[in-house]
Image 1: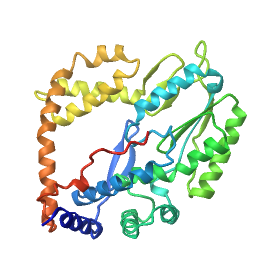
Image 2: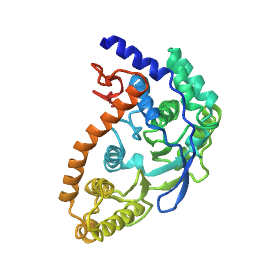
Image 3: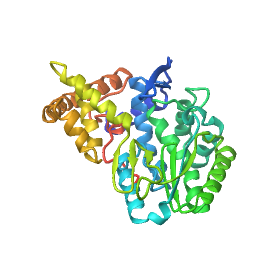
Image 4: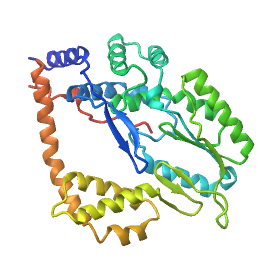
Length: 348
């Protein structure tokens, strides 16, 4: 079979795939044990979703607000942190007050009809639209939390809100991390008016609702006057940035658990190295030296993850080939190029 024929067969397999039957998984997230409903995709669904996102990345990234930092390649919480630090330390006049808000049950309440209408205006390929609609319809209301496509669709759905805040409300410093938003300003009354306008826009244009726990407050300055900003897992002050207490607690608890084990698991190693990344970019070295460094050896954890990744990459690729060939495809010559993320498009 030629490469062209194999690719065509691969595309047919993707277009004709069917959603699996899902049993919702309930998890309790964070220190507050907030209940979240997760839809776990099958391996076949995950493969298809990655193919869709790879094809749709140029559309998703076109017009993406420059200071939207959640679940986008080349961005993330750490880059967002650097930007906020720059704002509050170089432009204190326009960072005197903070409006902090988020959207109520964001993933669970995105209206299917409005999301599909927006997609119809942008996506002109009927097969791609049909694929997207089938994925959206996995849940009766909202989009499935846990699907790879959901983080992209939700970010893209809020693009209009981002431009409304920057271009019509003229916010000087505005950042969004998925459905969490902060706006800095020099005038408290102006921020209150912005909050009302944003609430109206969400309701009328997007069918969403602003959560009632929004806040407008004086940002910290001088001798402990005002408040710090808790956002993206960080707590921002004028002169320093530390970790959110819940993350610090989880990091120290994980370090103690690892110290009591004879051998750390690969999951332990990954989680602890993730916490190290948070610690490295904040002013929390004293906490690290006192509570974490005596409990774990990061060099050993890094070696463990490196060895596992070399093995895991080969194992996952073989599993994808097996799944693909089981559906009638031929792996010869194609090597699943359509589902591998080579040269991903950045949204920077």
